[in-house]
Image (cartoon, rainbow, N blue to C red):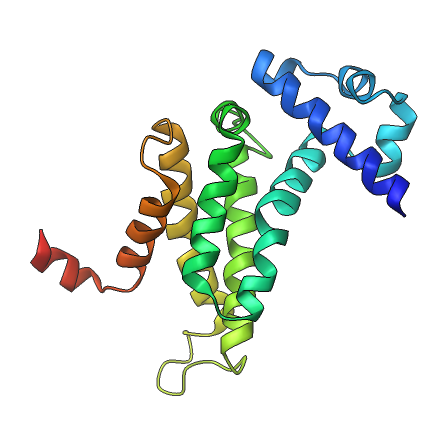
Length: 187
């Protein structure tokens, strides 16, 4: 089991180094495998393609570390950790954000944000829709907040991650806990 994780980590590191040096579209599975010191077949024993590996990196490095914080309802700390982990690997994410088209980085971020928000709603909620508003079921609310979180994360990366992670967590928390009407009043 440990060997599998080591190979996956090596493949991830290889892809991350390549993404910083060249466009994602031009990266081949052979280059990723060579960089990890394995053969192509080994790559395919772990991932379907380089997009699957990209999604694995985001899930492993961004989502997995915050699960314990969600379980302990430490939502502010969860936000700080997300932004800090993205910032820690800044070069990679600033290049990855340029991956467009089907299986784009934005799509990976939005899917990951949805998984994360669904966990938060599952952790806190009953799993049932709001009694007065049946549309407000956990899946729809998770998608709504995932879209806002994904947008904030993507724009922060696209703008060079100039704002420190702790401040970004504060900004997102501030926006997420206020209504649009309150925000309009404050502007």
